[in-house]
Length: 80
Image (cartoon, rainbow, N blue to C red):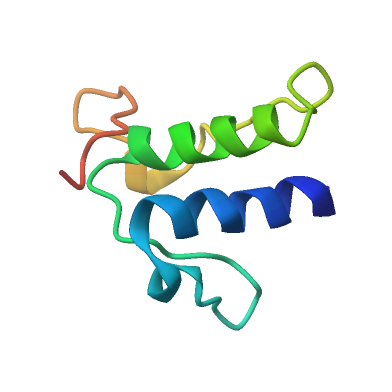
């Protein structure tokens, strides 16, 4: 948990600079990423560097209405 969080901060700092490490009210990072895949890649890199690749899995809320397209499929690239 906290090891991945702190590792994520260092990964973000290395890729985007110190300003990208500012946190919001709930403690989340908000670097200027260009796609949803880029955000997932950051998480995966932090998990791996923290040594939790086998213990941590990423789950998604597949019922999120923001990702649902008119044809009933989920699009993770809708913002780009």
